[in-house]
Length: 406
Image 1 (cartoon, rainbow, N blue to C red):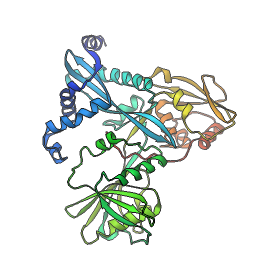
Image 2: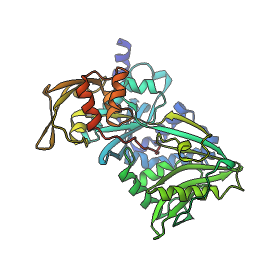
Image 3: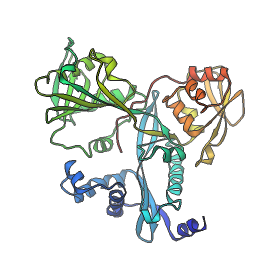
Image 4: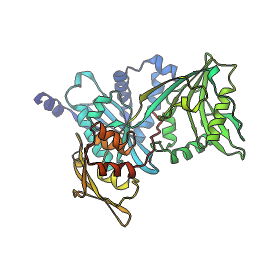
């Protein structure tokens, strides 16, 4: 412990500026072992091109780290984002670029950086944070919890669904066609968990995808309105689905009709679904291979503010949360929940029955990754049966959809 403090005393936390972009990327490359080959396969000619591509991140994001004099030795980046939480738009801090050189590891530098980042997010009104975990146990210890899954499927050409009659047509366009943005914007407004993408976020979405092969198939209904989008490419007789999002079931059928039209061209169809909605159930031939894995994690940054703005269904029964948080002391304590004149009031009074849980479980509960009854059954929530039933009633029942990567 004394050694840890001694090392911290010799270092300094400060903002990582644009002039530090090379050090920022060198640390990322070292920690995650990004090779020249991997970068070039992603469409970049060299690391220098990647360095140039990362400059906007240092302009748009808040990046800070530990410096040993002028050398960056540990860092964390917070992307400014907005996400849909059950129909309400929240500012979100997207955590990425996390890394520490091994000779500086094990001294609590990252713990301090994450704590610093949480305070900054709170100051900026980012009351929830997302991240892609390199280690789920590590980030759980810091207060994050799984919020969404990614399903990967693989089906044979002979298992493709039969054509379904639809009123519209599919047209192929570039992935940056205006109708792609139009459909996604409408989709993100009605799907819990989804990112509200700006140009910056679209650039990040495509950062490591090869520009030469990606295509957008857009479904237009009978009135010519874009209703669904499929991002795909074909390589070595495999039809790769990066993402499919749609506003109507007709659009879903229309996009699958388009995939099925490639029957004579491909042997396999492989792709991703960013929601716990098994494809097998939607296909006539359901004996397909699907795998599911946790994708993104979330963390409530400010419990009081998040609860105050969360779209609970109205209730007449007061209760209170008792929350513990390993990093953010402002989240530890009692949060009374009482509806007056149909409006929620959050206080620090222990009104009604208690719901005892940690910040990870509260995040999981409100993001609806798991329901209250299940969390109580596995002893992640401690409360009485009546309040448990109340939680089941007032928390919207929609699973999170998140397909971005940062």
